[in-house]
Image (cartoon, rainbow over all chains, first blue to last red; front, side, top):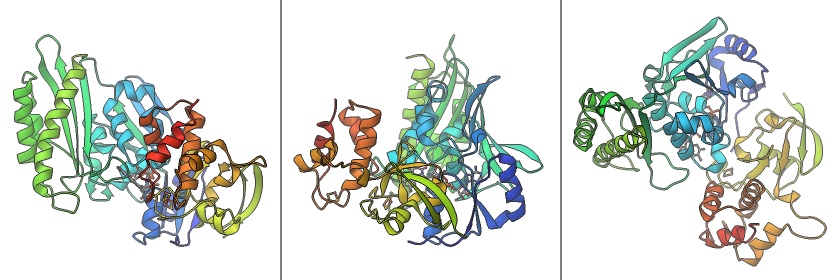
Length: 293
Length: 152
Ligand SMILES: Cc1cc2nc3c(=O)[nH]c(=O)nc-3n(C[C@H](O)[C@H](O)[C@H](O)COP(=O)(O)OP(=O)(O)OC[C@H]3O[C@@H](n4cnc5c(N)ncnc54)[C@H](O)[C@@H]3O)c2cc1C
Ligand code: FES
Ligand code: FES
C-alpha cells in the first residue's frame, strides 16, 4: 500500500510545531505514533499535504507529578504509561487502559495524545481519562487552553481541537487517599482488537462510614464518543458503598446512559447487558482498592 | 522532496536518500534489498514487518523511513554470523516453530527483543511478547516452546 505524497516536518520544539500548524492549518496533520494516521493515509481515508512529526519533542514525552497534579505529555506511549511506577500507583485505571491497547508492538508506538485525538468511542485510554476527570491541554502559537476531557470528544473521530492547535498533554489531579479505580474492556480476542464494550469506574469513600464522596463512571463503545455514565453516578452520590447500590448504578448505566449499536463485533443488546455487568465489576474492584484491600 | 538520512542498520551506517512517504519496511526491502523483513498487511496488524528500532520492537510498515534519521535498526539479517544461525533461530528450527516461515523473521525479532530485556520470561510474558505477531501455520505452541528453550 502506498502512502500519498506529503512534505515531512520534524520540529525540535512545541513552538516550532505550532508555527508550522499556524502556517499550514488544515493542510497539515500531526504525526505521533502513526498507528492510526499512517493506516488511515494508506487506506486513503484522509488526505494531507504536510506531516508534522512531534514524537522527538522532549516536553511532550514527560510524566510528572507537581503540586497535586500529574501531567502526562501527549507523546507518552502506551508502553511508557504501562511501565511508569507513578501511573501504576496513582492512576491504575489508566495503566490498565494502556496495557490493553493493541498489542506489544503497537504499544511501543501508540501515544496517549494520538488515542485522544483519534477520538474512537472504543479508545482504550479514554475511559480512564474520563473517570480521572483529566484536563486536555491544547496550545496554539498564541497560548494554551484547557478543556475538560468530557467536553473534548464531539463525535466518532472528532474532537474540539482547532486546526492551529496541538494537544500537548493532560493534567490530572492526584486522586486522594480512600479512592480507587478500575477498567475492564471486552473484545473478541485479547490482542489487536477493537473493544466491543469497555467501562471504567472511580470511587472515593469516607473511611468512617463507607459513604460515597465521589463516583465517576465512563462507558466506551456504546455511543458516538466515550461518555460519562451520568445517571449511574447520580444513583451512587452520597450512598453507602455496597453491592446493592452498585447493582442499582449498573442498571442505570445499562438503561439510561448508553445507546449502543449492532455491528459485527456484537449486538446492541449484548453491549447493553455487558455495560451493566462491567459497571458493577469495576465499581467493586474500585471499592476494594479504596478500602486498601 | 528526498532527504538524506543516516541510519545504522545491523551495525552498518547507511547514508541514504529517502522520500518522505516511504516506510521503513519499504526502505529495507526495496532500496536496501533486506527482504528478510516481510510485509503481510502493511497496516500494523500482522507483525511480519517487525524490526528492532532503537531497542524496541515496532511494525516497520508503520514507521516512516525519514523518521529513522539517527536511529539504530536491527533486522533479521543481523542475527546470523559467520559461525551460523543465532541461537534463537536454531531453536525455531529445532522445535519445529517454522512452517511456511513467513511470520518467522518478525516473530524471531520479537523473541530476541523479549529475551534481550528479560532473560527469564514466564510463559505469559512470552505470549505477551509475541502478541503483535500473527502465525497462520504453527498454532503458536512450538514458537512458545522455542522461545522458552532460550531462557537463561
Ligand atoms: C493493529 C492495531 C491495533 C490497535 N488496537 C487498539 C486498541 O486495542 N485500542 C485502541 O484504543 N486503539 C487501538 N489502535 C489504534 C491506535 O493504535 C491508537 O488510537 C493510538 O493511541 C493512536 O496513537 P498514535 O500516536 O499512533 O496516533 P497517530 O496515528 O500518530 O495520530 C492519530 C490522530 O491524532 C492526531 N494527533 C496525534 N497526536 C496529536 C497531538 N499531540 N496533537 C494534535 N493531534 C494529534 C493525528 O494527526 C491523527 O489524526 C490500534 C491500531 C492498530 C494499527
Ligand atoms: S506488514 Fe507491518 S504489521 Fe503487517
Ligand atoms: S510459519 Fe507460516 S505464518 Fe508462521
